Amino acid sequence: MRKTLTTLAALALATAATAEPVKVGMITTLSGGGAGLGIDVRDGFMLALKQAEGNEIELIVEDDQRKPEVAVQLADKMIQSEKVDVLTGIIWSNLAMAVVPAATAQGKFYLSPNAGPSALAGKGCSPLYFNVAWQNDNLHEAAGAYANTAGLANSFIMAPNYPAGQDALTGYKRMYEGAVADEVYTQLGQTDYAAEIAQIRASGADSVFFFLPGGMGISFMKQYAESGVDIPLLGPAFSFDQVILQAVGDAALGVKNTSQWSKDIDNATNAAFVESFEAEYGRLPSLYASQGFDTANLLLSAAATAPVSDAAAFQAALEAAEFDSTRGDFAFGPNHHPIQDIYVREVIKEGEVLTNMIVGTALEDHADAYAAECSF
View 1 (cartoon, one colour):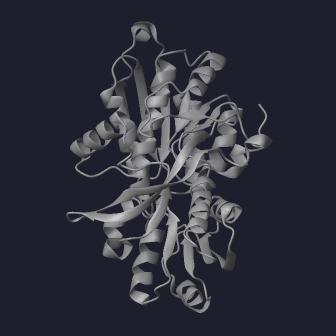
View 2 (spheres, helix red, strand yellow):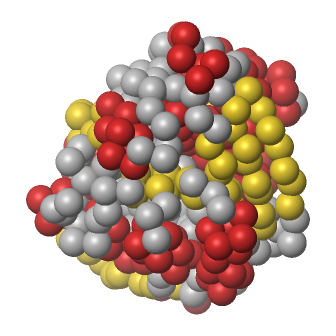
View 3 (cartoon, one colour):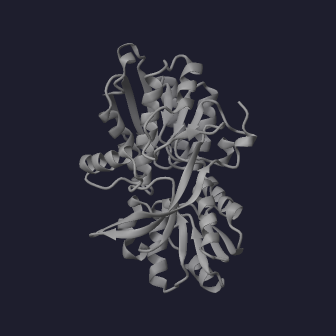
């Protein structure tokens, strides 16, 4: 377990001198499988704090080890002992489901820089819960929409058996108009995909849609490349993002994937973010880093506008989302999930570095499918 305590400057606005400090608890994955995702969320978040000036943000960072029971213990400690005002940081949807409902029930704001389970977008929504990344289904819905335009008619679909994996295949099927050759759920954290690759080989599919984040995706991609199966792959950014590509290698070249962010989105905020992240950390930012950066800037914008002790005013300030996002225009829907464009990217090589390039837009101003079920 790991803990750092940092007091950093926030946003330079005229009201900064009288603004109320905000104590933030970040619970994220910093060790074991999937640590790269949490590290990038943390680093993007802390970069935004470092770049800002004005309000005082006190940040406590803890490692959940990708274990729900650890995340719950950390959240309880942060709320009851540390007296945090805001929680953030969770990567995995099963951990979010273990932490977020209890945190919001105790009057704490939760800003998600990643996990967006459907249960928190619909009937289980809360006025204190904001997702700054996406609802889990979204990037998979975009992949389904892209598959239609690409003429893919018989997809083999696969994801881990946990809330985000279930949302992934639900999202793909919601938009995809073709047939499903087979639908397979793997174990969360699985590293051997020989059986699944054999199923793909025998399926008669013309495409494979898969969602396997972190180390799961690395293992699958390497084994798939070695298998000789030549059925085209398609997936969300989570399986083809900067965190994963260098480990996968050239096997990922040319694969299409869907994302609400890319380092080549053409706006000044994104260009500055990519440049400053690389300068600060010596690597290109990932999707997760951009989400951490945007989450911090949303928080800073709200803290500069309203005191966190006035929950109604602070909620309204978060809902206004008056910050410069790496994605350009940013707005929340009525259930506090983003309405945004989702792009099609292709894995390319820039020199010796694998990365992504936008080649199209899959969905414009896309909202999630659960907002109508949410009522505050």
